[in-house]
Image (cartoon, rainbow, N blue to C red; front, side, top):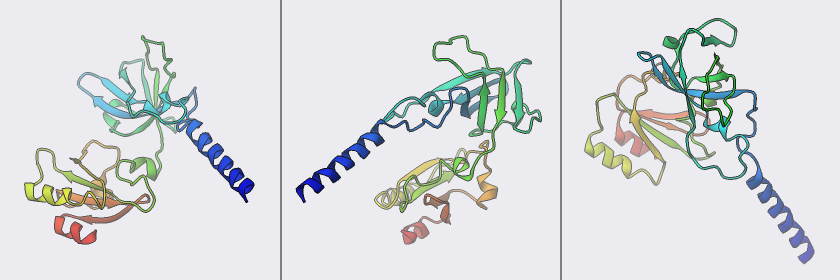
Length: 215
């Protein structure tokens, strides 16, 4: 019995060690620099792409939550296109859009210049990443207000009292995001409170008391 327990313990430790030594972003390829649009400055013809996960593809174990971005100047030499080869342009880019940027940036390349941006198809999980709960059986609540507005103090106090039930994200509704949440989730007004599990929307309300009743 003691030998069997020791064997199980050894297997458990080996599995734990393997998990810690794995590469969380190891599915990214060296020659495919994939990221998401983080900023579009049309006036100055500049795009910022978040390549944090691609940049960390070779890191093992726990990874610090820091961002890595590249700035891309939109010139006549930069090609922006869709996966099917049809041309696009800076005015059609949205925040959060998944893109493939060529050529990949080398770590020591301080004079990097992108030649091509290819807009990538996105899965439901990728499009709703900021709203989905990261854990099965748990909720994530997101509260959106309209730009320039703020939550009434009483509403905010009530929401803070729900933190033991669900993490809560507060933010201004992202008008320039790649997904039109207003249309897809039939959002009619603000503020709106959205409760997601790890698969999708489970509850939507404009009334904080209804949210309290839900939990």
